[in-house]
Length: 444
Ligand code: LLP
Image 1: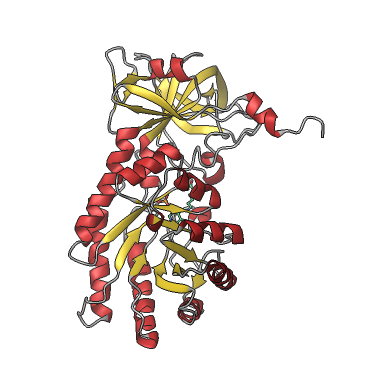
Image 2 (image 1 turned 180 degrees about the horizontal axis):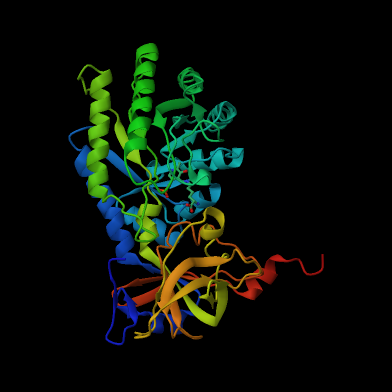
Protein backbone atom coordinates (compact mmCIF):
# COMPACT_ATOMS: atom_id res chain seq x y z
CA UNK A 1 0.00 0.00 0.00
CA UNK A 2 0.88 3.66 -0.49
CA UNK A 3 2.04 4.41 3.05
CA UNK A 4 3.90 1.16 3.76
CA UNK A 5 7.62 1.36 4.55
CA UNK A 6 10.31 0.32 7.07
CA UNK A 7 11.53 2.25 10.10
CA UNK A 8 15.16 2.47 11.29
CA UNK A 9 14.82 -0.79 13.21
CA UNK A 10 13.63 -2.56 10.05
CA UNK A 11 10.06 -2.81 11.26
CA UNK A 12 7.32 -2.64 8.66
CA UNK A 13 5.28 0.54 9.02
CA UNK A 14 1.92 1.53 7.65
CA UNK A 15 0.14 4.85 7.92
CA UNK A 16 2.83 6.06 10.34
CA UNK A 17 2.62 3.07 12.72
CA UNK A 18 4.95 0.10 13.03
CA UNK A 19 3.67 -3.45 13.08
CA UNK A 20 5.19 -4.31 16.45
CA UNK A 21 3.07 -1.60 18.06
CA UNK A 22 0.04 -2.72 16.05
CA UNK A 23 0.50 -6.33 17.16
CA UNK A 24 0.83 -5.26 20.79
CA UNK A 25 -2.33 -3.18 20.61
CA UNK A 26 -4.54 -5.43 18.54
CA UNK A 27 -3.00 -8.88 18.70
CA UNK A 28 -2.42 -11.23 15.78
CA UNK A 29 -3.70 -12.44 13.41
CA UNK A 30 -5.08 -9.09 12.25
CA UNK A 31 -6.12 -7.51 8.97
CA UNK A 32 -4.36 -4.13 8.83
CA UNK A 33 -6.06 -1.70 6.46
CA UNK A 34 -4.35 1.45 5.23
CA UNK A 35 -7.27 3.88 5.06
CA UNK A 36 -5.47 6.42 2.88
CA UNK A 37 -4.61 3.71 0.36
CA UNK A 38 -8.25 2.63 0.13
CA UNK A 39 -9.49 6.18 -0.24
CA UNK A 40 -6.91 7.15 -2.83
CA UNK A 41 -7.64 4.09 -4.99
CA UNK A 42 -11.37 4.82 -4.74
CA UNK A 43 -10.75 8.43 -5.81
CA UNK A 44 -8.40 7.33 -8.56
CA UNK A 45 -11.10 5.09 -10.09
CA UNK A 46 -13.75 7.78 -9.68
CA UNK A 47 -11.66 10.57 -11.20
CA UNK A 48 -10.12 8.45 -13.97
CA UNK A 49 -13.48 7.17 -15.20
CA UNK A 50 -15.23 10.52 -14.75
CA UNK A 51 -12.44 12.17 -16.74
CA UNK A 52 -12.21 9.61 -19.54
CA UNK A 53 -15.98 9.44 -20.02
CA UNK A 54 -16.65 13.13 -19.65
CA UNK A 55 -16.66 13.72 -23.43
CA UNK A 56 -19.09 10.77 -23.70
CA UNK A 57 -22.14 10.38 -21.45
CA UNK A 58 -20.22 10.10 -18.18
CA UNK A 59 -19.36 7.19 -15.91
CA UNK A 60 -20.05 5.96 -12.39
CA UNK A 61 -17.90 3.71 -10.24
CA UNK A 62 -19.71 1.26 -7.98
CA UNK A 63 -17.49 -0.19 -5.27
CA UNK A 64 -18.28 -3.93 -5.11
CA UNK A 65 -18.98 -4.46 -1.42
CA UNK A 66 -18.63 -8.23 -1.71
CA UNK A 67 -14.85 -7.79 -1.75
CA UNK A 68 -15.00 -6.30 1.75
CA UNK A 69 -17.67 -4.25 3.43
CA UNK A 70 -18.15 -2.89 6.91
CA UNK A 71 -19.78 0.26 8.21
CA UNK A 72 -16.66 2.42 8.06
CA UNK A 73 -15.83 1.31 4.51
CA UNK A 74 -19.39 2.05 3.36
CA UNK A 75 -18.95 5.53 4.83
CA UNK A 76 -15.61 6.05 3.05
CA UNK A 77 -17.14 4.96 -0.25
CA UNK A 78 -19.94 7.47 0.25
CA UNK A 79 -17.54 10.26 1.24
CA UNK A 80 -15.30 9.62 -1.77
CA UNK A 81 -18.30 10.00 -4.06
CA UNK A 82 -18.53 6.44 -5.36
CA UNK A 83 -21.64 4.34 -5.70
CA UNK A 84 -22.05 0.95 -4.03
CA UNK A 85 -22.80 -2.51 -5.39
CA UNK A 86 -24.46 -4.84 -2.87
CA UNK A 87 -25.51 -8.41 -3.50
CA UNK A 88 -27.42 -9.42 -0.37
CA UNK A 89 -29.79 -8.00 2.20
CA UNK A 90 -26.87 -8.14 4.60
CA UNK A 91 -24.69 -5.84 2.49
CA UNK A 92 -27.70 -3.58 1.96
CA UNK A 93 -28.14 -3.39 5.74
CA UNK A 94 -24.56 -2.13 6.11
CA UNK A 95 -25.27 0.55 3.49
CA UNK A 96 -28.49 1.53 5.25
CA UNK A 97 -26.63 1.87 8.52
CA UNK A 98 -24.57 4.74 7.10
CA UNK A 99 -27.59 6.13 5.25
CA UNK A 100 -25.84 5.49 1.95
CA UNK A 101 -27.93 7.35 -0.66
CA UNK A 102 -30.32 4.77 -2.13
CA UNK A 103 -30.04 6.10 -5.66
CA UNK A 104 -26.30 5.32 -5.60
CA UNK A 105 -26.84 1.64 -4.68
CA UNK A 106 -26.99 -1.22 -7.18
CA UNK A 107 -28.43 -4.54 -6.05
CA UNK A 108 -27.19 -7.82 -7.54
CA UNK A 109 -27.69 -11.52 -7.09
CA UNK A 110 -28.99 -14.57 -8.92
CA UNK A 111 -31.39 -15.55 -6.17
CA UNK A 112 -32.66 -12.48 -4.39
CA UNK A 113 -35.44 -13.32 -1.98
CA UNK A 114 -38.77 -11.50 -1.96
CA UNK A 115 -37.74 -9.98 1.37
CA UNK A 116 -34.50 -8.68 -0.16
CA UNK A 117 -36.29 -7.21 -3.18
CA UNK A 118 -38.78 -5.57 -0.83
CA UNK A 119 -35.98 -4.16 1.32
CA UNK A 120 -34.18 -2.81 -1.75
CA UNK A 121 -37.27 -1.18 -3.27
CA UNK A 122 -38.40 0.21 0.06
CA UNK A 123 -34.99 1.79 0.57
CA UNK A 124 -35.13 3.16 -2.99
CA UNK A 125 -32.04 1.59 -4.53
CA UNK A 126 -31.03 3.11 -7.85
CA UNK A 127 -30.96 -0.17 -9.72
CA UNK A 128 -31.72 -3.84 -9.35
CA UNK A 129 -29.78 -6.07 -11.71
CA UNK A 130 -32.26 -8.71 -12.88
CA UNK A 131 -30.94 -12.21 -13.31
CA UNK A 132 -33.82 -14.52 -14.35
CA UNK A 133 -37.35 -14.59 -15.80
CA UNK A 134 -38.73 -15.69 -12.45
CA UNK A 135 -37.08 -12.72 -10.85
CA UNK A 136 -38.79 -10.39 -13.32
CA UNK A 137 -42.12 -11.67 -11.99
CA UNK A 138 -40.92 -11.46 -8.40
CA UNK A 139 -39.77 -7.86 -8.70
CA UNK A 140 -42.93 -6.89 -10.62
CA UNK A 141 -45.08 -8.28 -7.81
CA UNK A 142 -43.15 -6.48 -5.05
CA UNK A 143 -43.09 -3.20 -7.01
CA UNK A 144 -46.85 -3.44 -7.55
CA UNK A 145 -47.42 -4.19 -3.87
CA UNK A 146 -45.32 -1.16 -2.86
CA UNK A 147 -46.72 1.05 -5.62
CA UNK A 148 -43.26 1.88 -7.00
CA UNK A 149 -41.52 1.61 -10.35
CA UNK A 150 -38.41 -0.57 -10.07
CA UNK A 151 -35.30 0.71 -11.90
CA UNK A 152 -33.71 -2.40 -13.39
CA UNK A 153 -30.82 -3.56 -15.51
CA UNK A 154 -30.68 -6.86 -17.38
CA UNK A 155 -27.70 -9.02 -16.49
CA UNK A 156 -26.42 -10.37 -19.78
CA UNK A 157 -24.26 -13.47 -20.17
CA UNK A 158 -22.05 -12.20 -22.93
CA UNK A 159 -20.25 -15.46 -23.71
CA UNK A 160 -16.75 -14.14 -23.06
CA UNK A 161 -14.18 -16.53 -21.65
CA UNK A 162 -12.18 -14.58 -19.08
CA UNK A 163 -8.66 -15.92 -18.55
CA UNK A 164 -8.96 -16.44 -14.86
CA UNK A 165 -9.74 -19.28 -12.47
CA UNK A 166 -12.88 -21.18 -13.52
CA UNK A 167 -14.68 -20.46 -10.28
CA UNK A 168 -14.34 -16.70 -10.65
CA UNK A 169 -15.06 -16.43 -14.40
CA UNK A 170 -18.66 -15.39 -15.05
CA UNK A 171 -19.05 -14.34 -18.68
CA UNK A 172 -19.05 -17.76 -20.37
CA UNK A 173 -22.35 -19.43 -21.26
CA UNK A 174 -22.56 -22.47 -19.00
CA UNK A 175 -23.02 -20.85 -15.60
CA UNK A 176 -25.70 -19.58 -13.28
CA UNK A 177 -25.60 -15.81 -13.84
CA UNK A 178 -27.64 -13.71 -16.19
CA UNK A 179 -29.62 -14.05 -19.42
CA UNK A 180 -27.87 -15.66 -22.33
CA UNK A 181 -27.25 -13.49 -25.32
CA UNK A 182 -26.77 -16.30 -27.79
CA UNK A 183 -30.11 -17.90 -26.90
CA UNK A 184 -31.99 -14.61 -27.28
CA UNK A 185 -32.98 -14.62 -23.62
CA UNK A 186 -31.47 -11.25 -22.86
CA UNK A 187 -33.56 -9.59 -25.56
CA UNK A 188 -36.63 -11.46 -24.34
CA UNK A 189 -35.97 -10.24 -20.78
CA UNK A 190 -35.78 -6.65 -22.00
CA UNK A 191 -39.01 -7.17 -23.97
CA UNK A 192 -40.88 -8.46 -20.93
CA UNK A 193 -39.58 -5.64 -18.76
CA UNK A 194 -40.53 -2.98 -21.31
CA UNK A 195 -44.03 -4.47 -21.48
CA UNK A 196 -44.60 -3.46 -17.84
CA UNK A 197 -43.92 0.31 -17.59
CA UNK A 198 -46.25 0.40 -14.57
CA UNK A 199 -43.67 -1.50 -12.50
CA UNK A 200 -40.36 -1.30 -14.42
CA UNK A 201 -37.99 1.32 -15.71
CA UNK A 202 -35.43 -0.42 -17.93
CA UNK A 203 -32.22 1.46 -17.13
CA UNK A 204 -29.83 -0.68 -19.04
CA UNK A 205 -27.71 -3.72 -19.67
CA UNK A 206 -25.13 -5.25 -17.41
CA UNK A 207 -22.31 -7.75 -17.76
CA UNK A 208 -19.56 -8.96 -15.48
CA UNK A 209 -17.06 -11.24 -17.18
CA UNK A 210 -15.00 -12.40 -14.22
CA UNK A 211 -12.36 -11.39 -11.75
CA UNK A 212 -8.58 -10.79 -11.56
CA UNK A 213 -8.38 -9.75 -15.24
CA UNK A 214 -5.36 -7.88 -16.62
CA UNK A 215 -6.31 -6.60 -20.05
CA UNK A 216 -9.30 -4.96 -21.68
CA UNK A 217 -9.77 -7.56 -24.45
CA UNK A 218 -12.60 -9.34 -22.63
CA UNK A 219 -14.31 -6.04 -21.82
CA UNK A 220 -14.05 -5.06 -25.47
CA UNK A 221 -15.82 -8.22 -26.57
CA UNK A 222 -18.44 -7.81 -23.84
CA UNK A 223 -19.01 -4.17 -24.83
CA UNK A 224 -19.33 -5.15 -28.48
CA UNK A 225 -22.10 -7.61 -27.66
CA UNK A 226 -23.89 -5.35 -25.18
CA UNK A 227 -23.87 -2.47 -27.64
CA UNK A 228 -25.38 -4.72 -30.33
CA UNK A 229 -28.16 -5.72 -27.92
CA UNK A 230 -28.62 -2.09 -26.90
CA UNK A 231 -29.09 -1.20 -30.60
CA UNK A 232 -31.56 -4.04 -31.16
CA UNK A 233 -33.67 -2.93 -28.20
CA UNK A 234 -33.63 0.63 -29.57
CA UNK A 235 -34.58 -0.56 -33.06
CA UNK A 236 -37.34 -2.95 -32.12
CA UNK A 237 -38.77 -1.25 -29.05
CA UNK A 238 -37.73 2.38 -29.51
CA UNK A 239 -36.11 2.32 -26.06
CA UNK A 240 -32.59 3.69 -25.67
CA UNK A 241 -31.31 2.23 -22.40
CA UNK A 242 -29.59 5.13 -20.64
CA UNK A 243 -26.94 2.94 -18.95
CA UNK A 244 -24.45 0.18 -19.61
CA UNK A 245 -22.53 -1.55 -16.84
CA UNK A 246 -19.39 -3.53 -17.62
CA UNK A 247 -18.97 -5.00 -14.13
CA UNK A 248 -15.78 -5.35 -12.14
CA UNK A 249 -12.87 -7.72 -12.32
CA UNK A 250 -9.73 -5.58 -12.62
CA UNK A 251 -6.74 -7.55 -11.38
CA UNK A 252 -4.23 -6.63 -8.72
CA UNK A 253 -0.64 -7.72 -8.09
CA UNK A 254 -0.56 -10.51 -5.53
CA UNK A 255 3.00 -11.37 -6.51
CA UNK A 256 5.58 -9.91 -8.89
CA UNK A 257 3.99 -12.07 -11.65
CA UNK A 258 1.10 -9.62 -12.01
CA UNK A 259 1.15 -6.17 -13.62
CA UNK A 260 -2.20 -4.42 -13.22
CA UNK A 261 -3.23 -1.56 -15.48
CA UNK A 262 -3.45 1.82 -13.72
CA UNK A 263 -7.06 3.05 -13.36
CA UNK A 264 -6.34 5.93 -15.73
CA UNK A 265 -5.17 3.55 -18.49
CA UNK A 266 -8.17 1.30 -17.94
CA UNK A 267 -10.54 4.25 -18.06
CA UNK A 268 -8.98 5.58 -21.25
CA UNK A 269 -9.12 2.21 -22.97
CA UNK A 270 -12.69 1.54 -21.85
CA UNK A 271 -13.86 4.95 -23.05
CA UNK A 272 -12.20 4.32 -26.41
CA UNK A 273 -13.91 0.94 -26.70
CA UNK A 274 -17.37 2.31 -25.90
CA UNK A 275 -16.98 5.22 -28.28
CA UNK A 276 -15.86 2.96 -31.15
CA UNK A 277 -18.63 0.44 -30.55
CA UNK A 278 -21.37 3.06 -30.40
CA UNK A 279 -20.08 4.89 -33.43
CA UNK A 280 -20.11 1.60 -35.33
CA UNK A 281 -23.77 0.82 -34.58
CA UNK A 282 -25.06 4.38 -34.75
CA UNK A 283 -23.39 5.50 -38.00
CA UNK A 284 -21.25 7.89 -35.99
CA UNK A 285 -24.18 9.32 -34.03
CA UNK A 286 -23.41 9.45 -30.32
CA UNK A 287 -26.54 11.29 -29.17
CA UNK A 288 -28.04 8.19 -27.54
CA UNK A 289 -24.81 7.06 -25.93
CA UNK A 290 -25.53 5.57 -22.52
CA UNK A 291 -23.77 6.41 -19.28
CA UNK A 292 -21.27 3.71 -18.33
CA UNK A 293 -20.69 2.16 -14.95
CA UNK A 294 -18.13 -0.27 -13.60
CA UNK A 295 -17.95 -2.25 -10.36
CA UNK A 296 -14.41 -2.74 -9.08
CA UNK A 297 -14.04 -4.41 -5.71
CA UNK A 298 -10.64 -6.09 -5.52
CA UNK A 299 -8.78 -3.27 -7.32
CA UNK A 300 -9.90 -0.77 -4.67
CA UNK A 301 -9.69 -2.72 -1.42
CA UNK A 302 -7.28 -5.57 -2.22
CA UNK A 303 -3.97 -3.70 -2.03
CA UNK A 304 -5.06 -1.62 0.99
CA UNK A 305 -4.67 -4.43 3.48
CA UNK A 306 -2.06 -6.86 4.77
CA UNK A 307 -2.61 -9.64 7.23
CA UNK A 308 -0.28 -9.61 10.19
CA UNK A 309 0.52 -13.00 11.71
CA UNK A 310 2.84 -14.21 14.45
CA UNK A 311 5.08 -17.17 13.80
CA UNK A 312 4.39 -20.09 16.15
CA UNK A 313 6.64 -22.90 14.95
CA UNK A 314 9.41 -23.36 12.38
CA UNK A 315 9.97 -26.86 11.04
CA UNK A 316 12.53 -27.89 8.38
CA UNK A 317 11.36 -30.85 6.28
CA UNK A 318 13.47 -32.95 3.89
CA UNK A 319 11.77 -32.82 0.49
CA UNK A 320 14.13 -35.12 -1.44
CA UNK A 321 17.17 -34.47 -3.59
CA UNK A 322 18.96 -33.07 -0.57
CA UNK A 323 16.53 -30.14 -0.43
CA UNK A 324 14.82 -28.79 2.62
CA UNK A 325 11.66 -26.79 2.85
CA UNK A 326 10.89 -24.99 6.06
CA UNK A 327 7.30 -24.93 7.23
CA UNK A 328 6.59 -21.69 9.05
CA UNK A 329 3.31 -21.94 10.96
CA UNK A 330 1.38 -18.78 11.77
CA UNK A 331 -1.60 -18.01 14.00
CA UNK A 332 -4.21 -17.93 11.22
CA UNK A 333 -4.59 -19.57 7.83
CA UNK A 334 -7.45 -20.79 5.68
CA UNK A 335 -10.05 -19.41 8.09
CA UNK A 336 -8.87 -15.83 7.45
CA UNK A 337 -7.72 -16.37 3.85
CA UNK A 338 -9.49 -19.16 1.99
CA UNK A 339 -8.22 -18.05 -1.41
CA UNK A 340 -5.13 -20.30 -1.65
CA UNK A 341 -7.28 -23.35 -0.83
CA UNK A 342 -10.20 -22.24 -3.04
CA UNK A 343 -8.43 -20.87 -6.11
CA UNK A 344 -4.79 -21.88 -5.65
CA UNK A 345 -4.23 -18.17 -5.18
CA UNK A 346 -0.62 -17.11 -4.79
CA UNK A 347 0.57 -14.58 -2.21
CA UNK A 348 3.90 -13.29 -1.01
CA UNK A 349 5.03 -12.41 2.50
CA UNK A 350 7.75 -10.64 4.41
CA UNK A 351 9.39 -10.75 7.83
CA UNK A 352 7.81 -7.67 9.38
CA UNK A 353 9.14 -7.04 12.91
CA UNK A 354 12.87 -6.69 12.32
CA UNK A 355 15.69 -6.56 9.84
CA UNK A 356 17.60 -9.77 9.22
CA UNK A 357 21.01 -10.34 7.65
CA UNK A 358 20.44 -14.11 7.46
CA UNK A 359 20.45 -15.80 4.07
CA UNK A 360 17.30 -16.83 2.22
CA UNK A 361 15.47 -20.01 3.24
CA UNK A 362 12.85 -21.68 1.05
CA UNK A 363 9.75 -21.53 3.21
CA UNK A 364 6.11 -22.46 3.06
CA UNK A 365 3.96 -20.36 5.34
CA UNK A 366 1.09 -22.44 6.66
CA UNK A 367 -1.84 -21.90 8.97
CA UNK A 368 -2.97 -23.53 12.17
CA UNK A 369 -5.88 -25.54 10.78
CA UNK A 370 -6.25 -29.27 10.61
CA UNK A 371 -5.59 -29.81 6.93
CA UNK A 372 -2.46 -29.93 4.84
CA UNK A 373 -4.04 -27.62 2.21
CA UNK A 374 -4.07 -24.86 4.81
CA UNK A 375 -1.46 -22.78 3.02
CA UNK A 376 -0.88 -19.05 3.46
CA UNK A 377 2.04 -18.62 1.05
CA UNK A 378 3.12 -21.61 -1.04
CA UNK A 379 6.76 -20.65 -1.67
CA UNK A 380 8.66 -17.75 -0.23
CA UNK A 381 12.27 -17.09 0.67
CA UNK A 382 12.27 -15.93 4.28
CA UNK A 383 15.45 -15.12 6.22
CA UNK A 384 16.95 -18.34 7.64
CA UNK A 385 16.75 -17.02 11.20
CA UNK A 386 12.95 -16.66 11.24
CA UNK A 387 11.76 -17.86 14.63
CA UNK A 388 8.71 -18.16 16.88
CA UNK A 389 7.50 -14.71 17.92
CA UNK A 390 8.48 -13.07 14.62
CA UNK A 391 5.78 -11.22 12.71
CA UNK A 392 4.95 -12.05 9.11
CA UNK A 393 2.96 -9.71 6.85
CA UNK A 394 1.04 -10.97 3.82
CA UNK A 395 0.11 -8.06 1.54
CA UNK A 396 -2.89 -7.80 -0.78
CA UNK A 397 -5.43 -9.39 1.55
CA UNK A 398 -8.06 -6.65 1.47
CA UNK A 399 -10.37 -8.35 -1.00
CA UNK A 400 -12.25 -11.61 -0.42
CA UNK A 401 -10.25 -12.57 2.68
CA UNK A 402 -12.23 -11.22 5.63
CA UNK A 403 -15.26 -11.44 3.29
CA UNK A 404 -14.74 -15.19 2.73
CA UNK A 405 -13.44 -15.92 6.23
CA UNK A 406 -14.81 -18.68 8.42
CA UNK A 407 -14.63 -19.93 11.97
CA UNK A 408 -13.23 -23.29 10.88
CA UNK A 409 -11.88 -25.29 13.81
CA UNK A 410 -13.72 -22.89 16.14
CA UNK A 411 -11.27 -20.14 15.29
CA UNK A 412 -12.46 -16.63 16.18
CA UNK A 413 -12.04 -14.27 13.21
CA UNK A 414 -9.28 -11.62 13.33
CA UNK A 415 -10.14 -7.93 13.62
CA UNK A 416 -9.95 -5.38 10.83
CA UNK A 417 -7.79 -2.51 12.03
CA UNK A 418 -7.57 0.73 10.07
CA UNK A 419 -4.46 2.87 10.20
CA UNK A 420 -4.24 6.51 9.23
CA UNK A 421 -2.05 9.42 10.23
CA UNK A 422 -0.15 7.46 12.88
CA UNK A 423 -3.29 6.18 14.62
CA UNK A 424 -5.07 2.87 14.50
CA UNK A 425 -8.68 2.02 15.16
CA UNK A 426 -10.72 -1.15 15.07
CA UNK A 427 -13.28 -1.29 12.25
CA UNK A 428 -14.42 -4.84 12.91
CA UNK A 429 -13.52 -6.25 16.29
CA UNK A 430 -11.84 -9.59 16.90
CA UNK A 431 -14.24 -12.43 17.56
CA UNK A 432 -13.92 -14.27 20.83
CA UNK A 433 -14.54 -17.87 21.80
CA UNK A 434 -17.55 -16.48 23.69
CA UNK A 435 -18.94 -15.08 20.41
CA UNK A 436 -18.69 -18.55 18.92
CA UNK A 437 -20.21 -20.27 21.94
CA UNK A 438 -23.02 -17.72 22.05
CA UNK A 439 -24.45 -19.08 18.78
CA UNK A 440 -24.39 -22.62 20.08
CA UNK A 441 -27.58 -23.39 22.00
CA UNK A 442 -26.14 -24.93 25.13
CA UNK A 443 -29.16 -26.88 26.36
CA UNK A 444 -30.65 -27.88 23.02
N1 LLP B 1 -19.70 -7.02 -10.09
C1 LLP B 1 -20.23 -8.25 -10.04
C2 LLP B 1 -21.54 -8.48 -10.63
C3 LLP B 1 -19.52 -9.30 -9.44
O1 LLP B 1 -20.05 -10.50 -9.41
C4 LLP B 1 -18.24 -9.04 -8.89
C5 LLP B 1 -17.49 -10.11 -8.24
C6 LLP B 1 -17.74 -7.75 -8.94
C7 LLP B 1 -18.49 -6.76 -9.56
C8 LLP B 1 -16.41 -7.36 -8.35
O2 LLP B 1 -15.34 -8.04 -8.92
P1 LLP B 1 -13.84 -7.60 -8.56
O3 LLP B 1 -13.61 -6.23 -9.15
O4 LLP B 1 -13.71 -7.57 -7.09
O5 LLP B 1 -13.00 -8.64 -9.19
N2 LLP B 1 -14.03 -14.66 -4.30
C9 LLP B 1 -13.32 -14.52 -5.56
C10 LLP B 1 -13.87 -13.41 -6.40
C11 LLP B 1 -15.34 -13.54 -6.66
C12 LLP B 1 -15.88 -12.38 -7.42
C13 LLP B 1 -17.36 -12.35 -7.36
N3 LLP B 1 -17.95 -11.28 -8.09
C14 LLP B 1 -11.84 -14.29 -5.27
O6 LLP B 1 -11.47 -14.23 -4.12
O7 LLP B 1 -11.03 -14.17 -6.20
